Image (cartoon, rainbow, N blue to C red):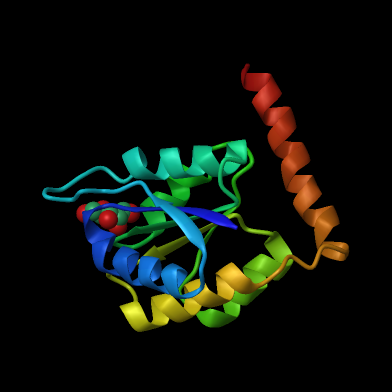
Length: 152
Ligand code: RB5
């Protein structure tokens, strides 16, 4: 599995924590920033990660900002992305099993690095269940395909 990870200036500590976790789990990743010497704009980091996931260049993405909200809104604009904003371990497991989420967003002003690590570990290691959930995820993809065609 290969992961793309990025944060804005509000998510640097958790980004470093999750990179350490991925090193321990032998998961390869590409770090797309930010350098964060100053305040940056979260869409500039969400879109490159989302595009790498959507194109299949990487399997999953992880995005961190102050709340996780801006990153998740931006990532979900990219076709094929199912970005889940998660701040608890139950949802981390459920969104992999049920939604086949392909990007995890978290907020560093909401949770600490310990909980973020637990959430990321569960999210990275939980498989999609498919079955009845596939029908629902397929409906999202079908809707996305129709609405994308209309705007082209
Ligand atoms: C940056 O101040 C902050 O707005 C950003 O990190 C994030 O919380 C946006 O949703």
